[in-house]
Image 1 (cartoon, rainbow, N blue to C red):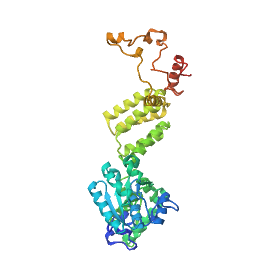
Image 2 (cartoon, helix red, strand yellow):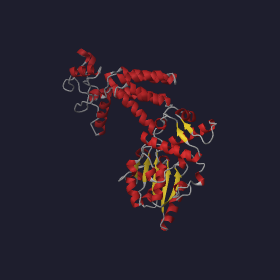
Image 3 (spheres, rainbow, N blue to C red):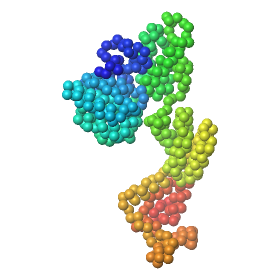
Image 4 (cartoon, rainbow, N blue to C red):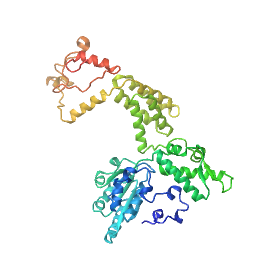
Length: 450
């Protein structure tokens, strides 16, 4: 076992190397049974538990938010598989380092020793770096465990994915945070030689769950920081307990809102919740997710751009003015900036969420594109062609074209498709689009129905 991780030795005696380590490192689980929140992977009959019972593990990608236990699981797996553990950071390593590790693994394999290569942030490896691993993984020279906070289907190449299992790690639930908080207070009491208690009615677990979004490392760091702060403020004797409160945690962290990774999965999840709330005509929920993004420092222009798309994709002709308003909001955001443009965003959000919805325009262009991509005839009929020269006119370009404005009602029966007629746009009965539907049904009853 790699000596950099003495906390995984069989002895329960704290290692001197960890005496000054952060609480999260001192409390790193040494066995599957100590890991919280991953029952779907570690419970009875779950995949990692089954592999552990046989002592053989496949290569795998562990996908999860920070603090869900990716490194911890890799360390425990290496111990259960009796493999040499090598850790590599995708930020710092290149193809050369990968090849050197593989060469070393081949030598160990000849001596009957397995190698587990743990690559942190594997999504940062480029294609060449990932390709350098393929042969070694395929031949079983190394067991690869890649850790990523990004969706591996986007960030890990398909060849490497096909040779690995992908397991998703879940953030802690509030019940797990409560267990972890209890364990941490006991460990802090042990290490400090002084009882550390939760202040009566503080409900620290609930607060820490809200602050850390299920990040185990975040929970432990927050508690340790709060205890250190309280210890420096308290003048009481060492025999008296230290009390941790919500106020002390807030003071230590200088943070009262959930964390939000503007480049990670949380970014995409939150904007998804925002758009779905708009689509679901819930202005209050949409405002909530808007507030989450703004408070976390999300680019207001990014939000406004998504609202512009939404105005056509999900509102469309049910409320045609939605696009104009969304564009005005985008321009206001660009000119004014934060914090004042939050008001413009709020106006746009409440309008878009409250107005009638139609995705008919979005579905129409998707149907048209599908036809074109499937090989539909795209030859422009002669009567629809432009005829800027005499020769083109002689060839029949533009001939027999009927100019609609020359006819009653500014409409005339005409064929505008190259072959058969098609119907892509199907107006709904929502908002102003019902008027569009009625008008088209009057003009083309064979295609549209009122």
